[in-house]
View 1 (cartoon, rainbow, N blue to C red):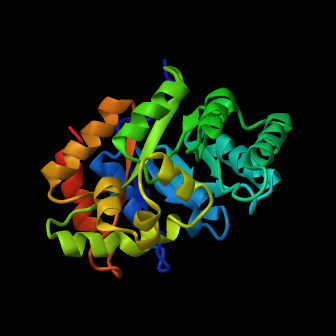
View 2: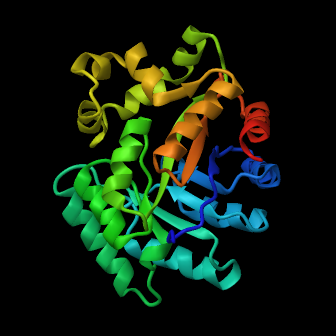
Length: 276
């Protein structure tokens, strides 16, 4: 029995300066996505998590992720306390961002604070951004599971072996609904290229067999193996591979080819193809 009932298809919600993301959240819930995830890089405060939960009816909302080096544990405790009073059980506390020296020690200390709070943020309500074996073990032992990003289905199978049968795993997958190879790759190259130079991502890419040149240039080979691009059938096949490899949920990080657009059409098309 998994610690969290995630549903198979989640999606990231893009913050909008005009507040339109709250309407987007309601739309995504109506389309049937199992979980809405808010990307941590878009969180200048934790308020959007409250706002999105209160703008929707029942869909779980997760942070992907709250950077532990930016937000003190007291902020996370207060967020959960507030939401449990009004919308119990809907917040999934995704944590990470412990790049730098001694990331395991930093995360363990942070989790200790969450455990000791009154009321605590329970292990079963939190997930960890995890790539390396030891962080995956920590996700298994001190959280409900793991939130890996920039990984192959082969990594997913390896991570499931470490996590065991009880922990949850939501694999975050960049998606470009575009069949032109050059346009699809160019749409996501900058975003992926930025991450390949952050924290533990380069090391994990090497563990998955990518070369230093692949990483330095954000090569086509790297993108083709880390990003689901193509038509809905191609993307559905990629999602299926992750699920068959052991993911409980695949989180669609949808990138429109127009960088100034909100991917309403893509969200709708993917929901039609992936959500039964």
